[in-house]
Length: 334
Ligand code: KG4
Ligand code: ZN
Image 1 (cartoon, rainbow, N blue to C red):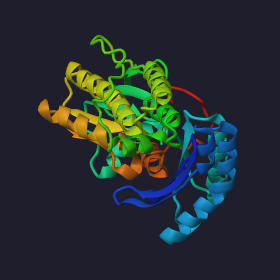
Image 2: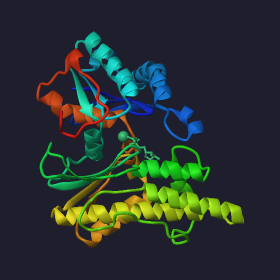
Image 3: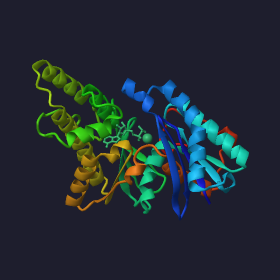
Image 4: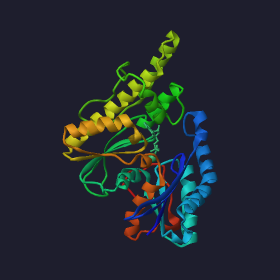
């Protein structure tokens, strides 16, 4: 069985072909660089870009993998949460394709796909586990006692971790997306140079807050520019360390208090080398198994969507032309 996965929930148009048991046959992604001049994703521009790129991405994927349309047995598509305009373009395309090919179509929860992206490394998830989902739109800690049961135990009260990376990169003039740019600048900086705030460290809960950090960085940058002493690399390294400190501390605490032996990360920020290094170290000190997705499946991608679609397709589900999009909604709620 070959499943086509379609992902358009934000600013990446990504399609992949996935065969259960065989793995990812191919993936084609078009990132939207047009948002760079705005320092963040502009929803209307994102949906218009998906209209332009979907068909070329699809035909390129088929050409590169030497696949005929008739060899696609099912379609999986992210139908939320995300930017509604972008989701509508992807779901409309997916429905037309499934209808034309006469194959089933299933909607996939974008965050469940991120969580399951860990399985693209070759191993099924181990249960019970704790998963930290960190992306441009989300910072969430899940306790997952069994397959398909997602208990949200903590989330951000304001900015997501990826949003914090993006906003801090913008303050430092490092471009968009900010995460990779901050990581690059931080590799030449001193993480102990500036002590930025680490919010909501109390042990009783797993919620996050990153807006205070963003303000502290802005105030530091303004003062340093005025005095002629701005060291971009040190600010990037110190801010990255503040974000990573909180993510690692809360994830470990969550794993210990739920008594789980396996910790996973997922989402665009899971590509961050410092987060991977620190969380792996913290887990190994406590004999917790640490897992991370392959780097190519951290950012939004069609492969995780196809994989997540598989379980529903195996149950015989077909959402047909009724499939709708949703801007927000719990994982496992649909
Ligand atoms: O999962 P994703 O592709 O899209 C959403 O669903 O939001 O995540 C994108 C986010 C952006 O905020 C980007 O700056 C961040 O992931 N990101 C990183 C890194 N690579 C991407 N953040 C920190 N370090 C990285 N290496
Ligand atoms: Zn995402």
